[in-house]
Length: 375
Length: 219
Image (cartoon, rainbow over all chains, first blue to last red; front, side):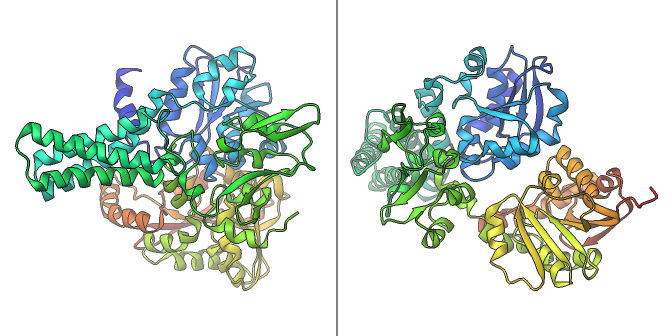
């Protein structure tokens, strides 16, 4: 990273909960010519910044579509990075006059929003999925634009978990400290802020080793709260003889941190389904086997390796349903409409609805369900 | 990945869009729709509404006797539009403004209208859409664009920013809707080759309505 990029990087990392827009359009990395590959991404500043760093030393076109400053996955899931935005970017930047080939490399995590055949139909550009993670792009390019199994599956390494911790801690800690300062005093505020940081970073560091999904998550959250309160109390005892108000402040702060995290800790990760999906009336991906022709598009877009191809029968099967994030990429991409969502109460969400209403499970989609036919 | 909860709030914005735009336009949005329709529509005219959103402008045009096609790339917005009672002839299509050439033949429309859409596009997109819109218009056909515009002088822009900030923040908190402003809407329309470009303003929201005529047969 160059020194002048540091303030931007700091802002993007600490405030990554919010959209950050960079200018959409075409960027040349290195000295791309007419044969250079065109890699598509969204206009979240952090992504574009990383993309340029990762592809340093290569000659490629980076086509930045307008995803409203939201990262590729969330934008696709929320309907802000679809074939419409890709077509718009291809046309606005006159890509067809810059390159001699007709191939776009799309981010795999945008498969919840982009319907590739619509891009081909309107622009003449064929598409292929790039790797799920941008750090795998150089190897992908070296391999001749082919993903290997490892590229297609999400990872959630420690450095990324720490980034998520920053995302949670950055807005939460100052607010917590301010409130405690106003209600009690500065010293208590500093202790409570420190507890909050330790709790958030500690929990995300421990994610592979403690349960944060399913009913067992409540044990984790209870333990986290007690740990935070105990740590705060210990700090007050070490500093001075604490007042009851200070001890209470530590306990309440620890509880507040846990409550905030427990709203949607998993939904902010690329690794677990959101809690919201498992509240009442859970839904899952369902395979209509008769329709499946074994195109295996679902295998190619699933970031969690849920599907397996049965080459013998020319059918896929849902091999690891418990890993599913319900992102819907498989449903959107299936050319035979053989996948759909089914709610626990039996209602289904047909692919046509998944393609247009994206991830909005709680709102409009459930209304549409009542009229959806069961075919 | 931003929190799923935050996403959920953001993606359900179509249902709150009308309220948000009413707030941020300080109640003038209805007047904007009416004025654009008044300029663009003669009875029986074929009108294309680019980025129709929840359909306010399309319906205003249809009510004046136009046969309207409202296009938007957001199916959620169109769903809200379809739920509104239409008095007149309106068709809703899921289509981006950058894709109009794929759907319509040249010289299909007597007027192309658009409200608060061009400010959502990036500069290359604006030029592209205007050039394609000209292709879909009959000779001498009208383009009428309403959008938020920035004052020409820097101090005035600063004052506007200060004055707008609280309202924009409140509107976003209540409805997750916001608007952006363009620098030189008339210049944009002129540069695209439209003639007789005329700009008028709806105060106090800083919304400009710019009209221009497509090149005539002789041109």
